[in-house]
Length: 412
Image 1: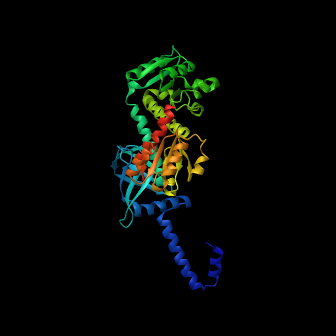
Image 2 (image 1 turned 120 degrees about the horizontal axis):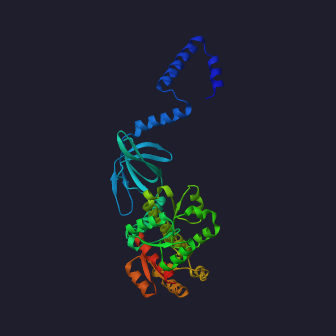
């Protein structure tokens, strides 16, 4: 607002007009003063709340949990909304999930849906009862796919934890440590397979032989000042998760930096021990699987159809694989020395010969044919394909053929 321009305009008015302007301004000032006594920051926030109350209060119908393999619906209330997302009030029986789908009625009665990622969750209570306060941010379809894939990996890792007798745990600590003995007793009581170890080095040697899945460090804080032991932790077997019991919270960052999967405060181990075991093993399994895929997933895509290339490239990246693209035999020949694990190639009426040449060039690799129907797929198997994909393939079909590459890496 340019006050100087307004002053110049008012200078041209006579006294009667100025009196009218004064009356209008006094009336506006009085209304604003009675409406609320805010500073600029509080006023902006409360005015936003007023618009929110009038437009969206009570318009949320339900929130649907889209956790893999499970679909539940919960009644919710919108507590706040902004450019960053929503704050929702949900019943305490809500099943935590990284991705949720919100269905609500927009002003005018139009039904809308949006996908949100849960970024924080707090349990709240007062005299009226208890509820969960859930903060969410909006995400696009690509992020939804990525997060759902991540949750599938977590679900698979967590399912193994129910078979406790098959989980081998090594507990590291002094023989005279009473807490170590008590900890081992608790683990055995829960049907875990437990073995003692006096030092980190002996535990590492034992882990190699016994194929242990979890290492619990009873005195995790003592490792922070021993660079040699920290180095030993970094050289542990790839499938071994590590849980460190620490005395001070500041030790957590140093241990996580060298590959420890989870840290548990000594004062809380009685209450949260088994939750910490689950977080350590599930988190490590997901990270280990992703790293293995990134190291081993290498695919050659042979196609002249850009739509097929884009679709396959997207699916490969979603599953942690890298890829190269060739549109003809000459381009494929340039990749002959590259360490691929799988070849995915067109198999249509006009490119059968190219497929046969490609099979000769990469004879040691499994090949998957991309074709239009089942009859062409069966013919591709006669011409050397290990499997085929009818276009467009489903997500499960893509994952099935990627197992060819995974099994080949495992066997080699």
